[in-house]
Length: 193
Image 1 (cartoon, rainbow, N blue to C red):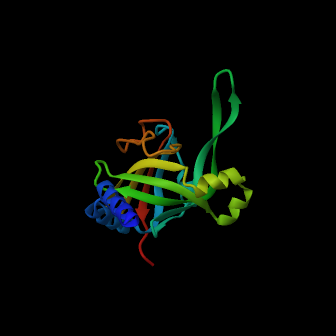
Image 2 (tube, helix red, strand yellow):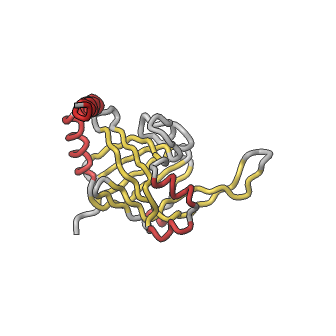
Image 3 (spheres, one colour):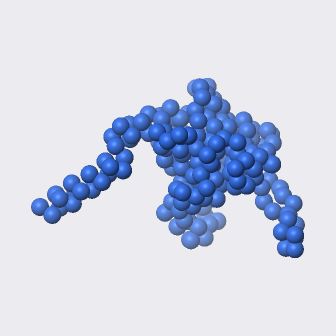
């Protein structure tokens, strides 16, 4: 009887957290995002840094099975850091891409998306990581809290690049200028082949 009572409580709590209608809405929204995408715009650091088109052209994005895969992830990395002024020059570096599991909350205004880093693309790159870095990936501790909008074949995602929890500095608009760590990514759907 205790097992049945525990199962009933768990199911009741699960429905209080996410109703069946909410789950169906999230599934439908996720299905609408599936396919291959090309980045058309990516800005970072409050819109001050735009990733050049020739670099974005090297980036392939796909969404399938509740996972977003990006073959390259462009970062602005510090160079010639001056500890007195706390300023640095910057340069772009294409990290190996990431695999993200996707959590959507389409009922929110604006619609919310969380991208949880689950691994690197290609997986062979994971050999260079420390065990603690791999554990962070596996335990889904790296979460990008964001918002999204799908308008026809254009998917716009604005997210906090360095957030580690659901509450961490989620954008409230698509300007990409609310915080230095916000990334604005605009993707165009590729035609089916």
